[in-house]
Length: 88
Image (tube, rainbow, N blue to C red):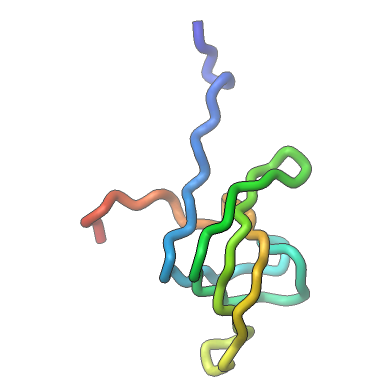
């Protein structure tokens, strides 16, 4: 028998090309808010028993900032819920 707490929904995986607006507490490691456009999803990892995504992304502080490519960890709950292909 499966209890309601026995299963956890899988966290939504970032989508290549998706832009994430991250608060400081939603990514590691850095200071301040960050705009990250996903270029590659490396893997899912866990910090303190919480799911995170290891990604490569084009990162900038503001939309006008040219930014730079970097690797970072993004808190899974900061990624928008899974989208069904073809949905808007």
